[in-house]
Image (spheres, rainbow, N blue to C red):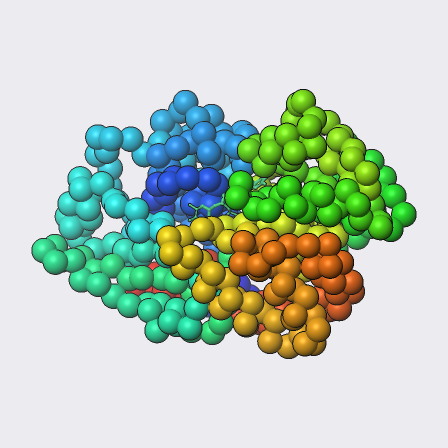
Length: 390
Ligand code: TRH
């Protein structure tokens, strides 16, 4: 609970939240839902029920969860398998539909029967585009029923819903020192760092120019140690290097490049990986935000959209993120990010120029993180908004 919580504030009350998550693909929908559920419960003491239609995806990042149970309590969150037909249940005080998933009809009807209509929020995808503040908070009355939905847009600038950031995140990140990093490397069976090694985490989509970058790294003047969580990308990396197996534990070496495939980590552990590496390749939404809190140089592989709409989104983010950075750094960073996202060629000079910027980038990232941390976080904004309506 924030320090400024007083008895009349929205933060002094615990209300019941129902979060609905429909897993479309990948891990982003459930990744954001699970992180938000944990923070609402832990930092704001809200009562949280999370409805998920694919518990296997959740179990990948929280292995204690049993995908075959219709209901279970974990970390004080009630996790329910969202099945059809939807079971009869009393709706919560706040109903959060993640990324415009369609709520079950029976549940919406039950919402209308409550003596006080629940606060109904749609949490949308993250974007750095200029239109976001104007759309954040817009209300949409239901065409037939006495219910109103509010659109919440996460974002990077004031006037948006903000970003997920646990109350203790900045402190825990600051406390993460070399000793903790070494402990982490031991815990995942990674070797000690070699001199001048660049340690890189890799999480991206299959269409990334992996082959090109692997060829560059193989010939790199300094060693590159790549860590890849198990999955399709690990298989692809192993195939490019003609290694037969992409087991977790494998270390594959080719020229100056070594690759270690690790198990898909628990969500909290994934943060630690981002803190410990020198460079993080991230994607989608949640890992992208976590890389910004980690503060290390990062490369975003944006989720692809039709007609290359995502390129505009990528440039919108680059504009605000690099605003205070020196021109040569902006140039090198844009060139590399564009290359990684298929907007330009990616060659050895793009890598080397980008790599040379790391010392300056660490400073730029710290300043960027400070700007973001000066704003309220997404869970705070949601609790405040919902509490003020109830
Ligand atoms: O998996 P994603 O590509 O998710 C995407 C995006 O959210 C996209 O915007 C959305 O439209 C699409 O899904 C449906 O990338 P993202 O958002 O980074 O989510 C990955 C989650 O997986 C994140 O919460 C971190 C977590 N993770 C782990 O817990 N352990 C791991 O080892 C790894 C690699 C990731």
